[in-house]
Image (cartoon, rainbow, N blue to C red; front, side, top):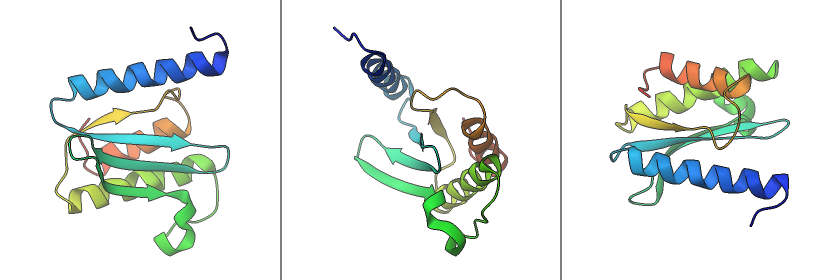
Length: 120
């Protein structure tokens, strides 16, 4: 049985991910990972076990990302991953926030991905 807060959060994340996979109806998954300084997003095909498209703030200026506010960087990552997904032929995804609260950088990434053409 999970006793610590970290163990409970890990169990909740896994439970949500299983539910997303079951209810996704074959749609690919937009997975978000955020740390204190960086944020990344991946479009994952769970059936094949491959990453179709990805973007990260670690790509830096080579991807056209400027240093600045974290929410602005997250929005740029959302737009970039959406453009790469559309180029790969993916428009419908399931949003997997990975246990993070839908607020701040995660929300900025999701809204930018929607504006760039992803449906979720």
